[in-house]
Each structure stands twice: as C-alpha cells, then as structure tokens.
Length: 170
Length: 241
Image (cartoon, rainbow over all chains, first blue to last red; front, side, top):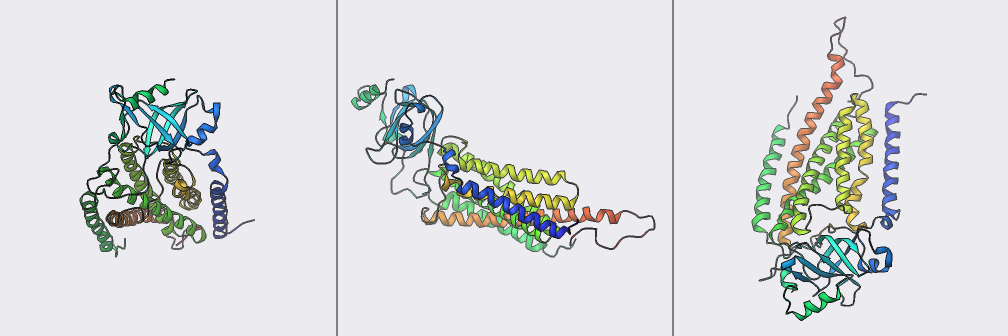
C-alpha cells in the first residue's frame, strides 16, 4: 500500500501534534506539582517531623522581620524563615556561614539549601534571595541595605542578640 | 539570486542598531535605578528582550514545522532552520545574561529551579533539532523529521512560560506594566523593539542562506552531466516548490 508523501506528511503532523498536546497536558494537569517541589515552606518542613532531619532539602519563605543576626567576626548569619509576614506565622531558624547577597533583608523571599536537625536549626550551605515581579524607582532618599535591619551578634553587649543566640545552641 | 529586498533587510539592521542605541541610553541612564536591586536591575533591558525573541523565534519555528507537514515547501523548511538557530542564539544569550543578573541578586549564578531548568531544556532541545538537521543528508527526509522534532520540542515552551506560575521557583513570575514603573516599561519596550528588528534581520539572512543551500542540494542531481547531454527540466522527484 502506498501513500502520497503529502498525505503521509499530514498524518505525521497530526500524530506529532497529538503527542505534543498529550505531553503538555500531562505536565500541566497531571499533578506533577506534587513531585516537583522546588522548596518546602516552613509549615511543610515542620509538619514533616523526624523525616526532615538529615537529608539535604530546600526551605523557602520570607525572612522574619527583626530576626536577622549577623556576626561579622565569624561570618555567621542567623535568621528565621517564616511562612508569611504575620508575627505568629510558622518559622524555622536558619544558620549560615555565607555573606548574604545585597538584597537580603527583613521580609524578603529566600530559598535556603541545607539540612534540618533535631535541634530545630536549619544549617544552610546555600542562601538564595528572590525578587518579586515588581520594579520600582526608589522613593526619595530610599536605598535599602540588609545591614540596616540586622542585629549585630558580634556585639556581646547586645542583650537581644546574646539571649536569642543562646536559645539556638544545639 | 534575486535580491529585491536587500535594502529592506539592511534597513532592518540599521533600524535595529539605532533603536538599540536609544534603548541602551534609556536602560542605562534615562530609566531610574530600582528600589531593591539598585543599578544591577538594568540587565533586565537585555535579558528580557533576548528571552522574548527566543520564544518568538521558536514559535515561528513551530508554525513553519506544522505548515511544512501540511503543505511542503523549501521556503518553510529554510525558515524553520533559520528561526531555530536564531532562537538558540537569543536563548543562550538570555540565559547567560540571566545568570550574570542572578549572582548579585539571588546570590548564585545558577540553580535548578523549574524556570531555569525548563529554559535549559529548550536550548538543549533546539540544539538537538539543529544537530539532527546536520546528520540527515536527504533534504526531504530532513525536512519531515525535523518538522516532527520541532513540534515535539515546542512542548517545552508553554512549560517555560508557565513554570513560574505552576510551580515554586526562584525566578519570579512575569512582570506586567502594573508591576513595573512606567519609565522602566517604556525603556523595556524600546529595547524589545530593537531586539525584534535585529532578530528579524538575523532570521531573514539565515533564511536566505538556508534557502540557497536547499536550492543547491536539490539542484545537484540535475546539474550533473548526463550521458546524452540531456538535462532534466522536470521537477526533482518527490519535491516541492
């Protein structure tokens, strides 16, 4: 049986389009999201219980306002990643030895990669800051810097820094 | 080769370069700095247009691929080849620019988030498309096979676009004029048009090269001397205008 090349090509086109549409539909509607979680939110991480201890995972959320502590002498950074902006939002304590990117500050979105332990500390070895889809000119005199919002943990006289640093000792 | 559009083509290049000069001035100096990122955000004026052009070019490739299979012509095959190559050029450029932007803002050059991953898949898929074209010698088979590959490869494009909406990503979702200050939007649009003119210029030139290659390939059997000194004037078997 022979088929003219034109008819054959059209059949090939229809077949390719069906395969393409099927593949796309599977990815779009196939609940792939369940298996494609780029990071866990603090609430999800906390709900994992013991299963979260050990493996390398990513945690994403907002930097809890007022939680950043930076010890420049030991390049030790400590902050909380919260589910949302509310003061009582679930949050996870994160420690890092990295100098954070310039945009790092209170209430900004972050994704950290590392391990969570029984001591309820997320030890991060990769700190990423994400940006929203908003692009705005700075308001008059406004130039933000993460260092403005931190508590200097290297100053031992600071009672706030001292006491909260104690609570996270594993 | 008949070249009555040469002036128009070169006009596109001139227009593209001039618009790019205006766009560069607007992006680098005229538009304000960004509240959170400061000056480094200005890379948006090249990163985003480059990615838009990559997506536009692969869409042109898809149209050519489908259209070729429904009604074959060497012109469609040549345009498919040209648009895929230019898409890889702009997509690769956009990816490098994005990486340069990521380091000072995100703090990392790269991370395998769904947007960055799907964009890498796009580049690999279209590099594969172009590689396959080099390996198939029969121009007709090449045209049909690559049209199929082009259709399948395009599955990734909606994924690239929607990845930031469907899944959690490090990359932010698409901005709109509502989320971008008016001056910045205007500067971005000027640069997008500059890229559009240059992309059209690239695609058009690359198309002409591909067209000439196809013509040479299918003319070859006819150009060979025959024993009786007779040259065939009929169409090449199984082909296409």
